[in-house]
Length: 173
Image (cartoon, rainbow, N blue to C red; front, side, top):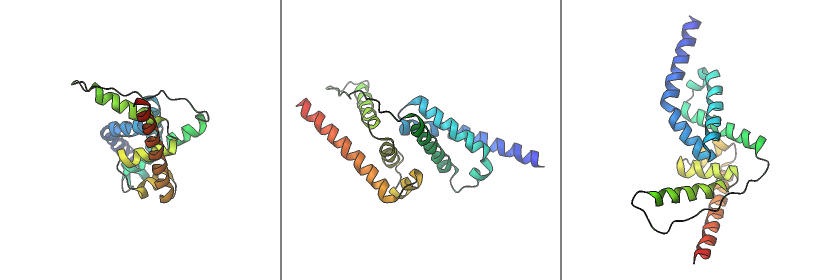
């Protein structure tokens, strides 16, 4: 009987992963800004989720539970390996809009390059707020901090982005 339940649980996990894997990878990419880091974070989270699927599947929102695991996996990674700062390439802006969408892709790449310059918690807060459209309370839960701290992360990140864009605008003029 226990073997049948374990097999059923595994099947449920496999079908859930099949359904949610792309969304988790997109979320992780937006969070990390790097395809390989995103894949690693999702793989770590899914490995842990598989081992604990009985508890994870009983959560109110298993997807949110696993997304939190992705955030934790990424935070663990940058705590271990990102002690050094890496310079980011200067974002470039295109002057004319091309009909094939190159201008919008260039703008999106410039935004990602700017976001990559933010400290990890600020970038995570901005991604959760504006990409995932979470409330500050939800962000605080995911980042294991107070709601005021989550607001502070977003506010500081936006101030840095605004300042950087203002400087670029002054240089372009």
